[in-house]
Image (cartoon, rainbow, N blue to C red; front, side, top):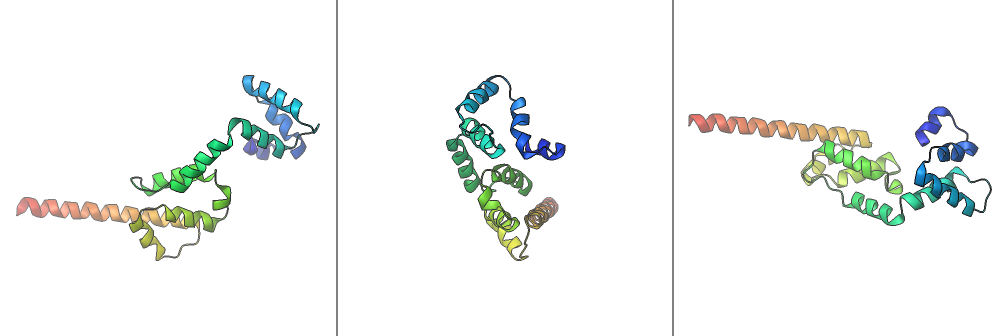
Length: 159
């Protein structure tokens, strides 16, 4: 909805009307009863989001997603796979990754130690730089491993 509001340039005071228009079946029934319980005649967009999330994304689920984020480690994933999962979970912990520097630092903390230590030498400042450099380092490491394996096969089969 937020993306649609930005695209359509929807005014703050009409966002709730637009959003509630798209609620169907049970979600619409929920909204009708939730609206009746609200004391204010005009419900702000922020208030709508809060009561909507309280109903459809309860606190215990938010806590679970936060825990998943803080426990996230690269382990068996490629840097690209890890970055995708990191981005997916980061939306649940806004305050911890609300600046580019915090996001970059937290991303690095979850990397495999050997990758993290190699990128530390570059003193990268932005999340994008960190992700790109880590992908390059990982790619070079994979290439080196393939070359070593190829040499082993050559010498192993002729010797």
